[in-house]
Length: 281
Image (cartoon, rainbow, N blue to C red):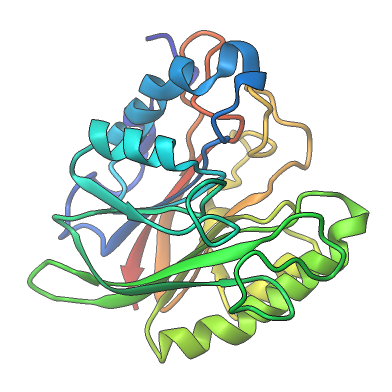
């Protein structure tokens, strides 16, 4: 395949792939773009194999996805049987978009999991608050590494409201809710938060999160990196469209990379994924 940047090369620029001794956890955030016939040449069946190749070569231990439909999740674990996934959709079922969390069963054991909604009543599935037009949520799981030195951490995944200024309050309140709830769920464990936050690093919502979390994805914002992560299947992001993140507490980010895998004009999604290697503090 012709690619702007081979994922294998990108992974090589990180800590050695697959080496439990080299890093504690390799994390990926990936907005998969939900399967929609409206996408013409970019429908899911046309980009599915490239998506699998992107994940296979990056070899993450855990992946936070956004916009995932159940059929896509099932496709992924069928093609990549070393992974399992969990999560409910935004209405609390399995018909719509999930914040699906995938994990390698040889590297991680799922201890417990749950979810909450970014609303005034977080335990009510499908609840919409703060002027947003769609329900938004967080899927979370507590994992334990399977190596000789076992380590537990909280992994959480989210997708913030997508509209511009009219959703700013909803994003800010969502960030405040996450800042209050994740430490309570973690109970002192390290935290990883992945997500499409639909806002830039200088926004109030991101600053609220980075007040207690470290932006591991900042390591990927290098001069030779794309100017953003949302590219609408073109491979050329709009300037300033850096909206995907890996945020951590209790881990030291050692490397991160934006993966721009493509095959000609075909891309695995309308977002570039980010992968980061984290070491325990």
